[in-house]
Length: 204
Image (cartoon, rainbow, N blue to C red; front, side):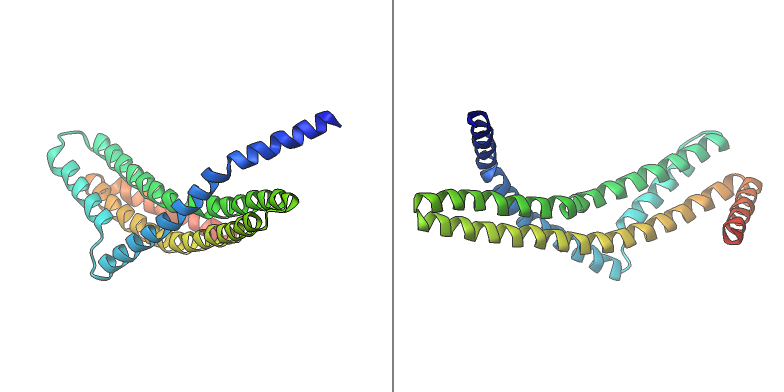
């Protein structure tokens, strides 16, 4: 029994030690998620005005490869593909800044609920009603903050993922045009192969 009590006491101390980091994490998400929402609204306003920063930067990089780089057509095609992959990776990383809130927000909210509830029960056993009430208020507040941040981040991620798909499609088209300018026959063969793959996928 003594060993069980020691383990329980150890777990309680660990949970209590996590109290401040968890509450601080919830507070951070409460500030971070609206900031991401503001950035998303600003980007939406820019897109409404037909300003696409990622596409424009990709286009400038393509032009630089075409006119400044003195290399063989095969090497230039490889560099274009590499540029497209690097741009896609950058878009994925920008989405990860929001995606992590979808998972972390509810988890921190749950931890921010259970830890204060344990403290509240300990305070109740000691007869400290004000401390118990304060811990319960913190518990429910953390739940709302974590879940709210997760839901808002999910909605932001949906919008940004749609934008990212549109950008990747347009950038891939621009890259295809550059490759077609380098080697029209190879570009035509690639499209024929893609069409055959699509036909096989539909028939399957």
